[in-house]
Image (cartoon, rainbow, N blue to C red; front, top):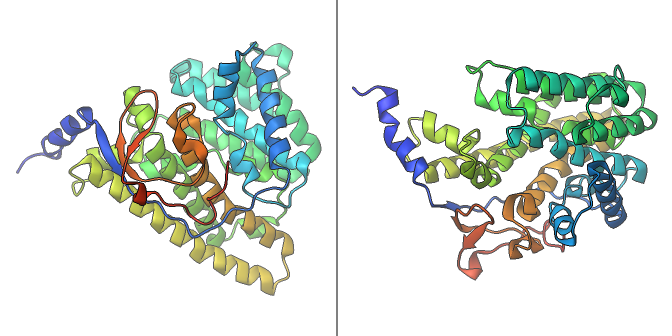
Length: 363
């Protein structure tokens, strides 16, 4: 009997030789709710991000960053939150990119440099360091500026929970435990909850500490990082990084023999996570209705919108598909994904394009 390592050698060879794969349909039965001030929130959040970057952008560079559509997730998650909170959440979406990009670009890839970087971020979040005491880099400037806003906008307990979530993300990145389950690892470092808290969520601790809530939240987070792992695969492929679920399944799961098997399995898992979320959300909503917890019901609505908002963002952002890509116009797509280092190329019969009712609008 061959060892597991030998059994997977063809899979490794297949992965290195990959040139294309079929992107299946990723349907979603949940609907997002677009904030009425979507346009102004997006514009102001983008202007804040450009200011933090301290650069003179060419029109082409600015256009590229705008097409990332970073504030989109926030603006599609609730129509009810005050604009000040929504703007803070949209800024947090930008901060997520600023904090994460040094790792993507191998600027702080592990070791003492990464530890120092993340500890400085946490010091700025907790207010134990001033901007004058730290190096003058983009992530630190943006973090310091946003935390000032959040301290004034959020109740003390919600601000504490927000920063605690940032700390959990940082600790997960610093962890050198290579034996941990990949699903648990990704769940810890998906950076979504702070954006939701910044919208001004209101709930009792007991509401978000119940087992049903934890299961619903985990299903939501899993859905989000699994979607991200599918759409970010080409970008990571050309950086020779395989820290994403399709690659992990191909290299570790005996039942997965080809990359297409891995993609199909991932997309089925995404659907399972949506079903799991809905199951536990409905239990929570029923109990909240019986107990008159209107604020918690609103919070559950935001969580429900977060899943389709994250999905449509991954279809519509140039961060994953390249600038001026015709695919960015709205809706969703499926077909043969031709791997290219600069842009997403989808080859399919026009009849195979589809639009989910909640996603069919100009972004």
